[in-house]
Length: 512
Image 1 (spheres, rainbow, N blue to C red):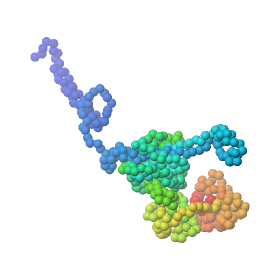
Image 2 (cartoon, rainbow, N blue to C red):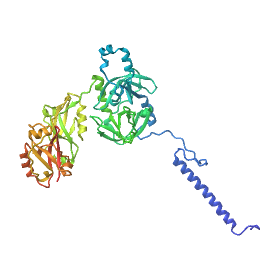
Image 3 (cartoon, rainbow, N blue to C red):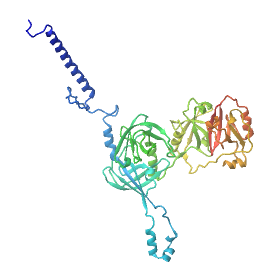
């Protein structure tokens, strides 16, 4: 029965409205619940509406799988106390200040002390050059490792600990060839960082850089290992860890630590066009740094192993020429007289694929491995010779203090260009040519006196002054032998050349 003001069908409208309202409440609740779940307990922008679902309190989770309970926060807390500020001071005279004859006692007596007092007051005052860097405490008795470029030429070194205590430090030793230095302060029971095995580092692994960039103490940055085995032209012996963890001026000598809080490297340099971090930093691997440190502490100097070979990169072209399946290996371009390699039977054109049980994939890798080998240790060298594997055992000796090598050569009669070698002008080695290129006239070979600009030879790397000593494994002893071999070369095949350049021999492959 309808009331007077009620229209037909109005009851159905109310029912529909009620259903829609109920559905809207249910949907709103579900959406709010989903948003609350997605936020995972983190703060969300304030909308003025209280959340319908409270986040459930959960126990802190590890930052990365496999890290256990040690988060980045815990790593930073453990490592920071062992990273120190290093202030290095070097005294220097102002511009124009130098010793004069007036410093001689005779002149002082002749002119009188008053004259000299006025003279000295007018001289530029001595000025101090101050450097700022970082260091890592590696032994609780105050032994600190840092960079050579931080403390190497300092007259005074001061160290400030994380608890603000300051100490005068003693320089134990430096090694410019790896940019590592060791200093010592008189203190006990200091916090330390444990050493990591840097050989176990992998590209993509998280690392933290701890140091004092721009004097901002106890700074921690996070990144990954971007690359391993980098050579950046900074030091003579390089095997850098590359990282994108922010490293800036003042970080030098600081710690690069892994996710276990272990010292994986010593921060050394950055690649930058602005002077600040650009995501490319370099650290000396802990294994290299520790080896250098141990020697400096024990003997005050670094002794390096010596094999006695000249080596070069194995390119795809060279690998094909020498019958090697891939480019993993190091090509021997020369063997030095009276060296361990010579005595053991290593030969030119051997490809070293393994040294002391470790695979070798670059000249830098092999060079560093040999240098870090203890003198007198017997090692096994696996190589490929004439496409066949061979193993040679030898004993490493101390690297000679000076390994001087002679230069290159040249000659007076121009050889006619032939075949694939038409880019080159080659001459006999005469006294005049030898003198021009700083060579010995007793050398044997043919000298490149001109390389065609933009040609294949130039692009491959042949240079004026190179001494050609082999073509396709055939010895070149004179211009005539060069011409005879060159005349028989197929025009559409690659040519393997052995050159001597500034005392070193290298292989190059010329392709038509």
